[in-house]
Image 1: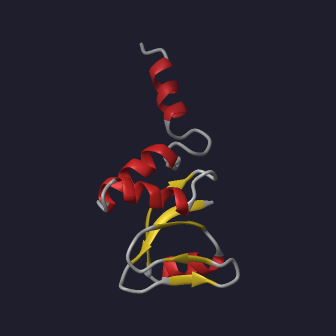
Image 2: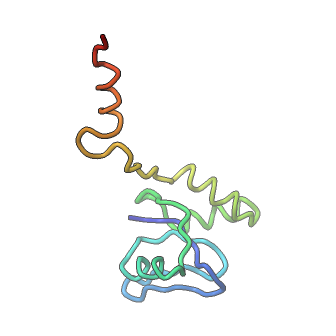
Image 3: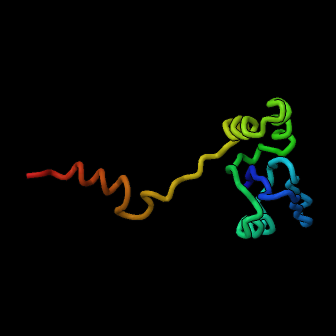
Length: 110
């Protein structure tokens, strides 16, 4: 799974096992590894969203350049193109969510 993220401070993170890095001064596209997952749990990583497998950090750098350094615009544009919607957990399981509500609507009332 790839994500668009940034560090939460003025520091860079690098996973030496995969040679991926998150620069100190701009967000980056990375493949989520155990190292980055641990950094996320420690609060050292700010995730903007999941992205498709076709998304690359080089492509995101182009979006930053095209937005004249406006990181917010670059993030929004990049996620609009490469973002992946994450499914919600609402309605999972038997008899819960939409199926349960639909069954109530279809049940005859006297």
